[in-house]
Length: 70
Image (cartoon, rainbow, N blue to C red; front, side):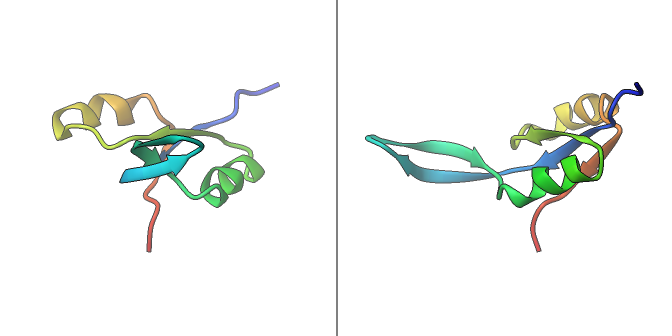
């Protein structure tokens, strides 16, 4: 069985995400994005915001990238 392509999906920072008793900064992504990558046969990986100097090394490990948003 062939390996599934590794597809990075960008996230965004939400400063006051709340769940349960916690309110913390969180890297978020609407669930539809990774689901669509999975339906297309890929393996979705969330990409939290990071310093620009790290982007090239991260993207080099991926087979593709989805920039989430509109």
